[in-house]
Image (tube, rainbow, N blue to C red; front, side):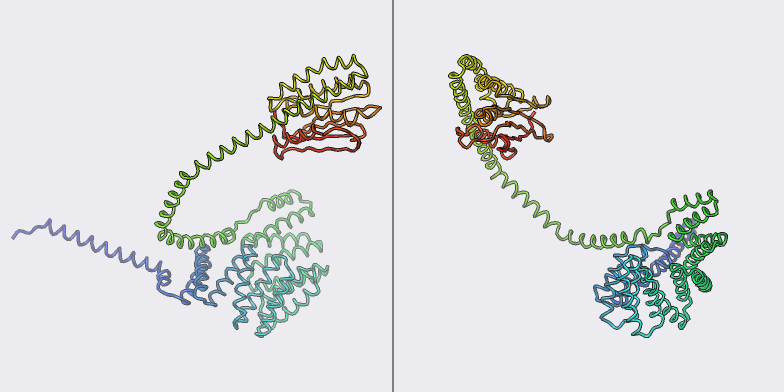
Length: 587
C-alpha cells in the first residue's frame, strides 16, 4: 500500500490552521466579553436595577475613565428611564448629579432647574438628609449667581431640614453656607454669627475640612472689617488644617489671602513667597480663577517693589492666560442636546418608515389637486383680472381726460375775465395781454394729451401767466421763485402750478389795494418725495370772495386719480393763502 505523504501533510496543515484560528477567536471573544461585560449586563437588567447600573456606570466613566461625554450619556439614560418607570430615587439622584455638573460648568440656571425638580420629589418623601443637601446646593448656586436673598432663603430651608435630622455635619454646612450668603450682602456681623455656629458644630463632629473653611471665612470677614491681626491668625489656622486635610484647592486660596495680609503689614518678601506658592498650586490643579488672581497679585506686588520688568511680565500673563477648560465645561449642554436629538431621531426614523408611503400618497394627491385647480380656475381668474385692470385703466383715463377738458375752458374763461377787466382800465395793456395769451393756450392744448410734463415746463408757463397778470396789476404784483436746479427735470402732472398761482392772485392780490407778493417754492423733502408750495402775503380768503374753487378741486381730484393715497394736499389760510402739495419724485 502506497502512502500519500502529500495528502497527510496537507491535512495536518489544515487542521493546525483550524486550531490556531479557533484559539485566537476564543481569546478575542474572551477579551471582547471583558470589555463589553457592563454593556451586556445593561442589556439584560431592567427597571430600577438598570437605573442603578446606569448611575454606577456614569460615575465610573466620569471619575475613573475621565470620559465625561460617555458618563453624561449614561446619566441621561438613567434620568429618562427613572421618569418612565417613576423611580423616585433614580430621578432624585440623576437630577442632583446633573445639577452639580451644570453648576460646575457655570450654567447656573440649568443647575437650579435640575435641583428644584429633585427637591420637589424629595419633599414628598422622608429623605430629609437628601433634601437638606439639595437645598444647600440650590443656596450655593444662587450665591454663585450673586442672588444672595435667594441663597439665604434656601440656606434656611437646608438648616431646618438638618435640625430635624439632628445631624451636626449637615447643620454645620447649612450655617456655613448662610455665613457666605450674608458675606455676599456685606452683612459681616451676621456672617460671623453663622460662621461661629458652623465652627462649633465642625469642632464637635471633628470635621477638619469644615474647620478650615470656617477659619478662612473668619479671616476673610475680619480682613473686610479691617481687623488684620485677627484675619492673619485665622488664615494661618486654616493653612494648618488644609495641609493636614491635603486640600490643594483651598490651600491655594489660603496662601493668596496670607499674601494679602503680608502686603498690608508691609512684608513684601513674605507676600511674594505666599503668592508664588499659591500660583504653583493653582497651576498644578488648573484653577483658572486662582491662576489669574495670582498673576494680577504678582503684577501689583512687583510694582510696589519697583521691579517693573517682572510686573509687566505678570501683567501680560494675566491678560493672555486662557485656561484649558475641561470637556465638561465646554460640552455639557451640547452632550445633553446631542443625546436628546439622537433619541428623537430614532423615534422619528421609526415613524418615518411607517408613514413614508402615506406621505407619498398625500403629496401625490395634493399635487394632482393643485394641478387640477390651476387648470380649471387659474387661467379664468387671470383673464378676469386682466379685464378688470383694462376697465380700471380706461376709467382713470376717461376721468383724467374729463378733468383736463374742464381745466382748459376754466383757464380760458379766467383769462378772458382778466382781459375784460383790463380793457376798461388800460386798453393798450389789454391788447398786449390778448396777443401774448396765445402762448398759454398753446401750452394747455399741447399738454392736454400728456400725463406728465417737466417742472421746468410748468414753471415756464407759470412765469408767463405771472408776467401777463403783471401787465394787469403793475407794481402791485411781485413774485419770487425758489427752485433748486436739480429739480427742473422732475416730472409732474400738467397745469398743476398755474391754477395755484391764479388762486393766489385772486385771493391774495386782486382785492388788496397795496398788492402783494407770490412765492413758488419747490424742494426735495426726501429721496422719493418733492414738495411744491404756492403762497402769497395777502389777507387770506375773503368771506365775500367769488369763484367756484374749481381749480383747486380739480387739482386734488387729479392727484387722487394719479397717485391714489401717495400724495399730500394742504391749504393754509393764515397770514395769506398757501397751498402745499407733496407728490412722488418722478425723474
